[in-house]
Amino acid sequence: MDVLLQQIINGLVLGSMYALVALGYTMVYGIIGLINFAHGDVLMVGALTSWTIIVQAREAMPGAPGWAVLILAALISMVVCAVLNYSIEKLAYKPLRNSPRLAPLITAIGMSILLQTLAMIIWKPNPKSYPTLLPSEPFNLGGAVISPTQVVILATTAIVLSLLMYMVNKTSLGRAMRATAENPRVAGLMGIRPDVVISATFIIGAMLAAIAGIMWASNYGTVQHSMGFMPGLKAFVAAVFGGIGNLAGAVVGGISLGLIESLGAGYLGPLTGGFLGSQYSDIFAFIVLAIVLTLRPSGLLGERVADRA
Image (cartoon, rainbow, N blue to C red; front, side, top):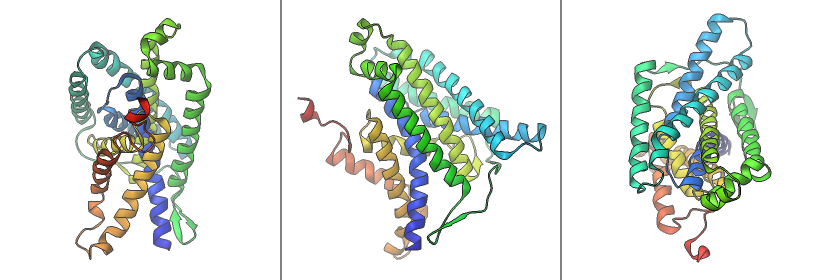
């Protein structure tokens, strides 16, 4: 029972990070129908930027509280990622907005490779240890343990998701986003500026990715230029699993995928007699993707084609 509870905690933490990144995918896809495969690399830029800020801040202010340094790094990383994603949308995606869908898809893959290469040049290819800024003494929870970092990850995710849902459902920007997703031309006739809404969507998605990148680095204790590929790919799977274009679906898909992966990693070895260990946990994301695309291509909370007819 202790092992099960521990894996559930680990799965919720992992799923929280997937959910934040998946929201960026699903927001952009819901409005302009683009799969932004560079989104995972925005997460990487956020993590590496925060690492730089933390290292510099600790040298300049050695007595500063860890939480204050972490908040400072998070704010600067969010700004950097917002500017980056805004620039990517304007320079790489906007000129191709009316092109065949294959063109922006290839461009997104190219942007992913470009960001990884630039990050490798700026921060060098070797992995870097991410500083521990929060207390390391874990809490005991029914026989399982949860670290203060994991508590902060879960709490931050809950707060961010609540604010995002409020923004989308209760504010004028959220209404503009929903209207643009429904029909950009009609939204424009109603006084909404689709270009502004699309840019805002990319900025919000980038800020979520920056937060997720800091969470990922804090949880695993290392950063490098290639760290965004696998979280980005799995977050895309989570978005498809939940129903890409559906915000609630992205959250459900991210949490579900995190739990599936964590429970699979914990029990895969015993179930296969040691043949497959926890190092094979990545296969669960792609098994889930294959099953969803086969049985329900629209995802768990996505709209069926028959429902739209």
